Length: 189
Image (tube, rainbow, N blue to C red; front, side):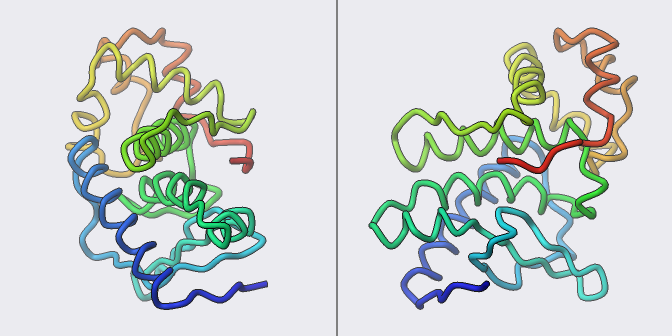
Protein backbone atom coordinates (compact mmCIF):
# COMPACT_ATOMS: atom_id res chain seq x y z
CA UNK A 1 0.00 0.00 0.00
CA UNK A 2 1.41 3.38 -1.04
CA UNK A 3 1.07 6.19 1.47
CA UNK A 4 0.61 9.81 0.33
CA UNK A 5 3.59 12.14 0.11
CA UNK A 6 2.81 15.85 0.21
CA UNK A 7 5.10 18.40 -1.52
CA UNK A 8 6.71 19.53 1.76
CA UNK A 9 7.53 15.95 2.72
CA UNK A 10 8.85 15.23 -0.76
CA UNK A 11 11.13 18.28 -0.63
CA UNK A 12 12.52 17.23 2.75
CA UNK A 13 13.06 13.63 1.59
CA UNK A 14 14.90 14.97 -1.45
CA UNK A 15 17.04 17.14 0.82
CA UNK A 16 17.98 14.07 2.91
CA UNK A 17 18.71 12.14 -0.29
CA UNK A 18 20.95 14.85 -1.73
CA UNK A 19 22.85 15.23 1.54
CA UNK A 20 23.27 11.47 1.87
CA UNK A 21 24.35 11.10 -1.77
CA UNK A 22 27.00 13.80 -1.48
CA UNK A 23 28.30 12.33 1.79
CA UNK A 24 28.35 8.76 0.40
CA UNK A 25 30.22 9.83 -2.74
CA UNK A 26 32.80 11.65 -0.64
CA UNK A 27 33.35 8.66 1.65
CA UNK A 28 33.01 5.79 -0.82
CA UNK A 29 33.44 7.13 -4.35
CA UNK A 30 31.09 8.21 -7.07
CA UNK A 31 27.83 6.79 -8.27
CA UNK A 32 26.98 5.53 -11.72
CA UNK A 33 25.79 8.85 -13.18
CA UNK A 34 23.54 7.12 -15.73
CA UNK A 35 21.10 6.32 -12.92
CA UNK A 36 18.62 8.83 -11.50
CA UNK A 37 16.08 8.95 -8.70
CA UNK A 38 12.52 8.59 -9.92
CA UNK A 39 10.58 8.94 -6.67
CA UNK A 40 10.19 8.11 -3.00
CA UNK A 41 7.43 5.83 -1.80
CA UNK A 42 6.35 4.69 1.65
CA UNK A 43 5.40 1.04 1.28
CA UNK A 44 5.04 -2.13 3.25
CA UNK A 45 7.99 -3.59 1.29
CA UNK A 46 10.33 -0.80 2.42
CA UNK A 47 12.98 0.09 3.06
CA UNK A 48 14.63 -0.85 -0.23
CA UNK A 49 15.89 0.61 -3.46
CA UNK A 50 13.88 -0.53 -6.46
CA UNK A 51 15.89 -0.25 -9.70
CA UNK A 52 14.36 -0.14 -13.18
CA UNK A 53 17.19 -1.34 -15.39
CA UNK A 54 15.42 -0.42 -18.66
CA UNK A 55 15.12 3.28 -17.75
CA UNK A 56 18.14 3.47 -15.40
CA UNK A 57 15.93 5.02 -12.73
CA UNK A 58 15.18 3.87 -9.22
CA UNK A 59 12.58 4.44 -6.56
CA UNK A 60 13.43 4.47 -2.89
CA UNK A 61 10.81 2.67 -0.84
CA UNK A 62 10.72 3.74 2.79
CA UNK A 63 8.92 1.82 5.52
CA UNK A 64 5.47 2.45 6.90
CA UNK A 65 7.15 2.92 10.29
CA UNK A 66 9.16 5.82 8.83
CA UNK A 67 5.91 7.32 7.53
CA UNK A 68 4.22 7.05 10.92
CA UNK A 69 7.17 8.70 12.63
CA UNK A 70 7.25 11.43 9.99
CA UNK A 71 3.59 12.21 10.69
CA UNK A 72 4.60 12.69 14.33
CA UNK A 73 7.28 15.23 13.30
CA UNK A 74 10.09 12.69 13.76
CA UNK A 75 11.90 12.23 10.42
CA UNK A 76 14.66 10.16 12.00
CA UNK A 77 13.76 6.73 10.65
CA UNK A 78 13.31 8.16 7.15
CA UNK A 79 16.77 9.77 7.36
CA UNK A 80 18.30 6.46 8.46
CA UNK A 81 16.54 4.49 5.73
CA UNK A 82 17.54 6.99 3.04
CA UNK A 83 21.14 6.79 4.24
CA UNK A 84 21.05 3.01 3.89
CA UNK A 85 19.41 2.99 0.47
CA UNK A 86 21.72 5.66 -0.95
CA UNK A 87 24.58 3.15 -0.80
CA UNK A 88 22.56 0.85 -3.05
CA UNK A 89 22.18 3.69 -5.56
CA UNK A 90 25.94 4.01 -6.08
CA UNK A 91 25.90 1.04 -8.48
CA UNK A 92 22.40 -0.49 -8.59
CA UNK A 93 21.91 -4.25 -8.66
CA UNK A 94 18.91 -6.48 -7.99
CA UNK A 95 18.10 -7.41 -4.39
CA UNK A 96 19.39 -10.92 -4.95
CA UNK A 97 22.82 -9.51 -5.94
CA UNK A 98 23.46 -7.67 -2.66
CA UNK A 99 26.53 -8.89 -0.83
CA UNK A 100 27.41 -8.83 2.84
CA UNK A 101 29.90 -6.08 2.01
CA UNK A 102 27.28 -3.84 0.41
CA UNK A 103 24.84 -4.34 3.27
CA UNK A 104 27.58 -3.74 5.84
CA UNK A 105 28.60 -0.51 4.12
CA UNK A 106 24.95 0.54 3.78
CA UNK A 107 24.29 -0.08 7.48
CA UNK A 108 27.49 1.68 8.54
CA UNK A 109 26.66 4.66 6.34
CA UNK A 110 23.02 4.80 7.48
CA UNK A 111 24.23 5.15 11.07
CA UNK A 112 26.86 7.71 10.06
CA UNK A 113 24.33 9.78 8.10
CA UNK A 114 21.70 9.52 10.83
CA UNK A 115 24.15 10.81 13.44
CA UNK A 116 25.25 13.68 11.18
CA UNK A 117 21.70 14.79 10.32
CA UNK A 118 19.81 13.98 13.52
CA UNK A 119 22.62 14.92 15.93
CA UNK A 120 22.11 11.82 18.03
CA UNK A 121 23.64 8.36 18.29
CA UNK A 122 22.12 5.74 16.04
CA UNK A 123 21.10 2.38 17.45
CA UNK A 124 19.51 1.10 14.23
CA UNK A 125 20.80 -2.29 13.22
CA UNK A 126 18.74 -5.37 12.58
CA UNK A 127 20.16 -8.70 13.73
CA UNK A 128 20.79 -9.87 10.17
CA UNK A 129 23.11 -6.86 9.61
CA UNK A 130 25.19 -7.01 12.81
CA UNK A 131 28.07 -9.15 11.58
CA UNK A 132 28.36 -7.21 8.30
CA UNK A 133 28.31 -3.90 10.19
CA UNK A 134 30.98 -5.11 12.62
CA UNK A 135 33.35 -6.18 9.86
CA UNK A 136 32.88 -3.01 7.81
CA UNK A 137 33.28 -0.86 10.93
CA UNK A 138 36.58 -2.56 11.73
CA UNK A 139 37.75 -2.24 8.13
CA UNK A 140 36.97 1.49 8.05
CA UNK A 141 38.59 2.10 11.46
CA UNK A 142 41.79 0.51 10.15
CA UNK A 143 41.64 2.08 6.68
CA UNK A 144 39.06 4.86 6.29
CA UNK A 145 39.47 4.93 2.50
CA UNK A 146 39.26 1.14 2.01
CA UNK A 147 35.88 1.11 0.28
CA UNK A 148 36.75 4.09 -1.88
CA UNK A 149 40.00 2.39 -2.97
CA UNK A 150 38.19 -0.82 -3.94
CA UNK A 151 35.42 1.04 -5.78
CA UNK A 152 37.91 2.93 -7.95
CA UNK A 153 38.56 -0.30 -9.84
CA UNK A 154 35.39 -2.23 -8.98
CA UNK A 155 32.39 0.12 -8.69
CA UNK A 156 29.76 -2.55 -7.97
CA UNK A 157 30.01 -4.13 -4.54
CA UNK A 158 28.87 -7.50 -5.94
CA UNK A 159 31.99 -7.61 -8.14
CA UNK A 160 34.47 -6.98 -5.32
CA UNK A 161 36.58 -10.04 -4.54
CA UNK A 162 37.89 -11.33 -1.24
CA UNK A 163 41.41 -10.90 -2.63
CA UNK A 164 40.77 -7.17 -3.18
CA UNK A 165 39.50 -6.75 0.38
CA UNK A 166 42.32 -8.74 1.92
CA UNK A 167 44.92 -6.76 -0.06
CA UNK A 168 43.71 -3.57 1.66
CA UNK A 169 45.31 -4.78 4.89
CA UNK A 170 42.38 -3.29 6.80
CA UNK A 171 42.43 -5.68 9.75
CA UNK A 172 40.23 -8.44 8.33
CA UNK A 173 41.16 -12.10 8.07
CA UNK A 174 40.92 -13.88 4.74
CA UNK A 175 37.89 -15.78 6.09
CA UNK A 176 36.16 -12.49 6.97
CA UNK A 177 36.90 -11.13 3.49
CA UNK A 178 35.41 -14.32 2.00
CA UNK A 179 32.28 -13.78 4.10
CA UNK A 180 31.89 -10.16 2.99
CA UNK A 181 31.78 -11.06 -0.71
CA UNK A 182 29.09 -13.71 -0.18
CA UNK A 183 25.45 -12.95 -1.06
CA UNK A 184 23.53 -11.21 1.70
CA UNK A 185 21.07 -13.67 3.26
CA UNK A 186 18.63 -11.39 5.12
CA UNK A 187 16.30 -8.49 4.43
CA UNK A 188 15.62 -7.03 7.91
CA UNK A 189 16.72 -3.44 8.64
